[in-house]
Length: 94
Image (cartoon, rainbow, N blue to C red; front, side):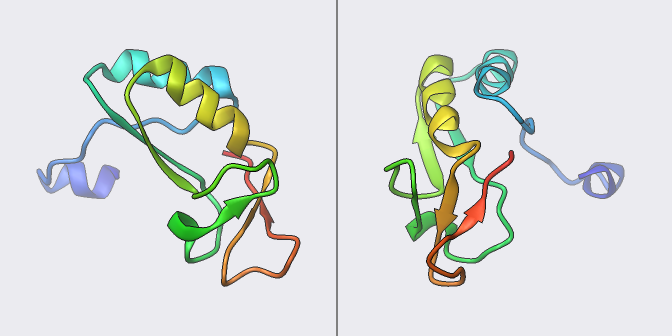
């Protein structure tokens, strides 16, 4: 992101969360009316994937900081299963 910012390319506000509480805190800091929570997993097809926690999709649109925390809680520490992973999926750590 620093490279883009250095070249004066607009970068939307973001944060990387390792806990659900950090996800809520980032949403509060960013402000606004909606947020996108994305699982950081090295696999394609995250949007159509499913977590072993029961959550469908590794990309979620939420509308409040508390909702960001709830979705992050279902992602972080769970395995995301996509068409590019095996049946066990990949662990989402952030």
